[in-house]
Image 1 (cartoon, rainbow, N blue to C red):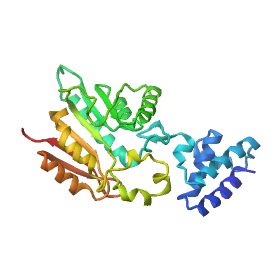
Image 2 (spheres, helix red, strand yellow):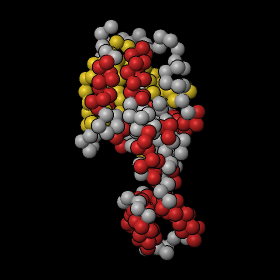
Image 3 (tube, helix red, strand yellow):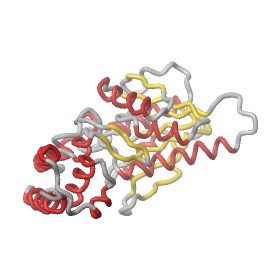
Length: 290
């Protein structure tokens, strides 16, 4: 069977299974198996697949037809230009979170350029690191900063540590329920978080790729999706320098509620920024006056 025939038949199969962008999905799987850039498939339409290659592709397509995420099948995803390994123990990084990463490293680099003779390195905390995508991106984009990353999941931290090691990113990882593992009095210039924000009752109706394969621990934000924003509003200021910033990813239509929670705990919400689809997605807040 040729490359083109494989793409056409497999895309038809995935379309019947309700998979979005079926041809793109097949091309991505096939490019992974053949170790080619996806667009190079178009230069190889007449190439015959070996029986071994065809067997692997068929297995991958069946898994994708069962709605297993593409990223789990190939084992990684691109995040801010870095290849981040993922598995069922971590949330698959979304494109929207790249906006949070870019906002965060821009802030750290701005602070760095404003320092003439810093007495201590800049420090940033990734609250709920998951795959480590945010922490790794910050470490690689802000060599001047010390990066610390927390997660309650031992299994997620294993993935994050492996990502940092493979990408030569220096990150300190701690297993922690919230801020509990941090020493008292430790302060950061930046706290960044993409917390669980899906209301508990809504998880079951999400796409199968999410509700069946992403860890519930990384999705469930409590009854209204705001549990972790409440905790951050209460506790984050105690770990942030007076000139520091808190940067959060938001779920759909959560900007007003999250802002109100922060206001109630004396934060100053400086900005709510929109994502590629125009949804309010990134919140930036500063600690208020004591």
